[in-house]
Image 1 (tube, rainbow, N blue to C red):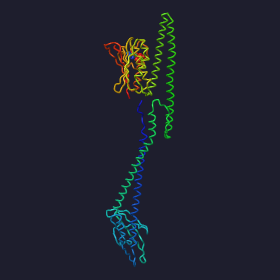
Image 2: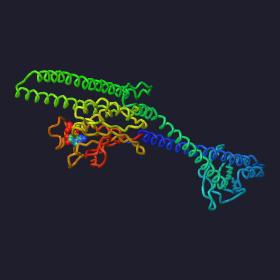
Image 3: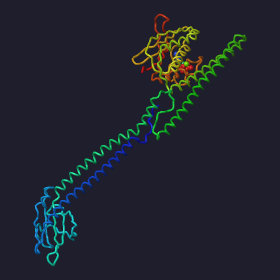
Image 4: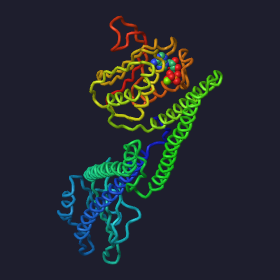
Length: 471
Ligand SMILES: Nc1ncnc2c1ncn2[C@@H]1O[C@H](COP(=O)(O)OP(=O)(O)O)[C@@H](O)[C@H]1O
Ligand SMILES: [Mg+2]
C-alpha cells in the first residue's frame, strides 16, 4: 500500500527558509540603521567638541587699540585631548595674515558665515583630519577685517571608535538574526504541527475505524478535513454495502441451491429408471459444483475485502483448528478418513479470526477431498521461534508434480482434480489470508514412512503449512 507520492517541496522547509531569509534581511537592515545612527551621533559629539574648542579660542581674541591679540586658552586644546590622543592643529588668521598656529592648515573657501561653524574632513600631512572653521568680523578702527579660526584633529581615535561601533552593530545584527532565525524555525514547526497531528490521528486509526475526523483543526485545514470526512463517509457506506452484498449474495445463492439439492435427492430415491437416476445424479453434482463455486467466489470476495483492512484480534489457532475439525469430522467420516490432531497450547496470534478460519477450512477441505478413503489426516500446530506453524498432512499422494506455486493462483486446478468438485480458489484464499497476516503458505510432499498404521499419515501425501508470525 505504501507508495512514494510525488512531493512538491515541504511547507515547513519553505516557511523556515522564507522566515530565516526575512530575519537575515531585517538583521542586515538593523545593522545598517544602527551603524549609520551611531556614526552620526559619534560624529556630532566629536564636532561639538571641536566647535567648543574653536569657540573658546575665538573668545580669547581681544582687539586692543587696533591690534588683534590671541591668547590660546589651555582648555581649548586640552578638551580635545580628553576625547582621544589624536594630534591637534589650529590656525588663527586675520584675513590672509597668520596670527598663530599652522600656516599650512587649509583655509576654507568660501569662508563660513559669521557665527556658523564649517566642518570638513580632509587630508593633512598624510592623515585624515576633521576641521572646524569659525569666522568673525572685527572692526579695527575704520576698517573691518575677518578673524578666521580653524581647529583640526586627526581621526585615528574616531576611526577606532567607529570600528568599535561597527563591531557592536554587527554583534547586535547577528544576535538579532540568531534569535529571529530560532523564532522562525519554531514558528515554521508550530505552523505545520496541526497537519502532522491530523496525519497521526488518521494513520493511527484501526483499519475498521471509519469515524469522521472530529478533532479541532486550524480554520485553513477545515476544507481538507471536510473533504476527508466526506471521503471516509463514502468509503464507509460503500464498504458496508459490499459487506452486506456478500452476506446477502451468499445466503441467496446457497439456500435455494441447498433446497434444490434436497429435492433432487428425494426424487432420486423415488425414481427407478436407470437413465433418470443418472441424470438426477448429474444434476446433484452440478448443484454441488455451483454451490461450491458460488461459496468459494463469495468467500474469495470476502477475503479480498477483509484483507484490505485487516482486523487484529487475538486468535487461538489451536482452538480454532479444533473447532473446524469437529465440524468437518462428519464429512471425513463419510470417506472413512481419520482426522488426527496435535494442537498444543500456543501463544495467540494477532489477526482476523474469520479469515484464518476460512484459510484453514479450505486446506482441510482439500485434504479430505483429495485423500483416498480410509486414510489419515494429521493437523499439527508448532511454535517455531517467532512463528506459529499449522501443518495439514494427508495421504492423498501429494500435489501433482510441476509448479505447486502456480496452484495457488486463482482458478488454478491440478491434474489430480479431475472428477472432484472445486473452483480452484481454495489455495488462493489460504495464501492471501496468510500473506495478509505477514506469513506464508508452504506446500511440501510428505514421504511414505514404514511403521505401524494409524495415528499419523504413513503413505505419501502433501504437507500444506500456514506460517504466521507472532507479533
Ligand atoms: N491436499 C492436496 N493434495 C493434493 N493436491 C492438492 C491438495 N490440495 C490442493 N491440491 C491441488 O491444488 C489444486 C488447487 O487447489 P484449490 O485451490 O483448493 O482448488 P480446488 O480444490 O478447488 O481444485 C487442486 O486442484 C489440486 O490439484
Ligand atoms: Mg480446494
